[in-house]
Image (cartoon, rainbow, N blue to C red; front, side):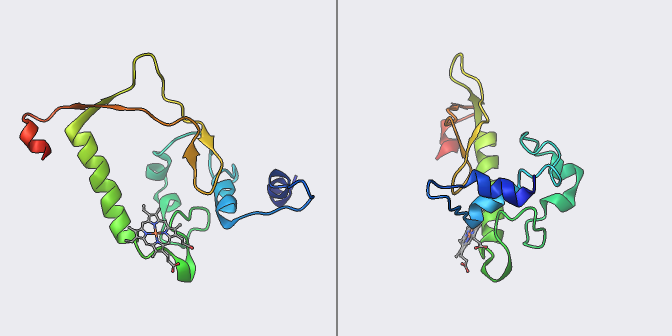
Length: 135
Ligand code: HEM
């Protein structure tokens, strides 16, 4: 079946019409097995193997987390720094563990942006030598 047909079927409404937002198209493109090997698997290392696939400056139409063209996100440089800084701070300052008996569930929920179906609950454990380092 043609990829477009699958898109239309997935978004069919009760009145027979289909409505597809740009974000839904993007979400589905990121699952296209012709472009992404094992698209449903969380494999961030895929971008290390092939750096071109992770180019998000708007020229690679298979991967547009910041959009493209005239309306491309102007916050890319700040976003790049903030995501890295916040993540690095959280990993540097805390050990993380899951609540007793729970497991990580990576199932996602289709929507305007990709959300996890089950929220992640992670417990931070302070690991810096002095509590003053947390202020
Ligand atoms: C990781 C962080 C971010 C992501 C994933 C992101 C993603 C996006 C996306 C997908 C768009 C729509 C682009 C389009 O329509 O083609 C957008 C637009 C926009 N973003 Fe971001 N963004 C991020 C961070 C930021 C930051 C830090 C700022 C500002 C400080 C910002 C400001 C804007 C503005 C003003 C627009 C509208 C641009 C326009 O319509 O002309 N974004 N962003």
